[in-house]
Amino acid sequence: MVKDHENFNFLHFLILVHLLSNGGKNNYLEVTSSQMSRLINRSQQTASKVLIDLERENLIERVKNNKKFGIKLTDEGYQSLKDIYEILKKSMEVSADKQIIFKGKIVTGMGEGAYYMSLEGYRKQFYNKLGYKPFPGTLNVKLIDARYINSRRDLINHPSIHIDGFRNSDRTFGWVKCYTATITAVARSSYTLNSTPQHYKEGNVHVLLLERTHHDNSLIEVIGPHNIKETLKLKDGDNVVIKIRE
View (cartoon, rainbow, N blue to C red):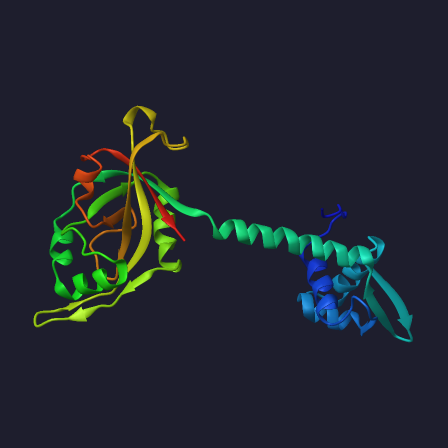
């Protein structure tokens, strides 16, 4: 567990990491306040104060040698870094297992999905990369609020199954990114923004991001091997929860 150190901040952390990465766990490193100021991008006066703070908190040990100081991590300084590392490592591992969640309502689309799903240039790739030929049409989900709209905007940065764009005799079609997901239909009486959904049906699907689309970040398009609406007995206005597995 990280020990409480008064006024410990990012500048202190940078210097401790610098010492550790340069052998300062077992050796005294000869450094100056000007070198430390460049490291933390602050004035020499600020760098000197940070070093004094670290020494007062028993996180470093300093030995003066003429005009320079030899600086070494104390056992407590090293343990503090180790504790921070363990917290970050655990947090990263937990974060990697988390799902991206969207909540929204089923809405009627413009019929574009059926057209695009019928194109052989896409259908072959869907079959080879997703393992099925999608039902000719997309399920359109209107997102509930800004939290999910922002997550939809950021979805492009997450790992996906890439479907290449192609050109036929008429026009060029853009790439498609596919995200493995589940979709859950939520009973109307149980649905609130912050509640855990009391679902009654679930299906495995893929969420799509298209290079070229008329939709904005408030709408998600979903495909599956069968008609999702019929399979889950959904109708326009029904609430759903979509979970993307990273």
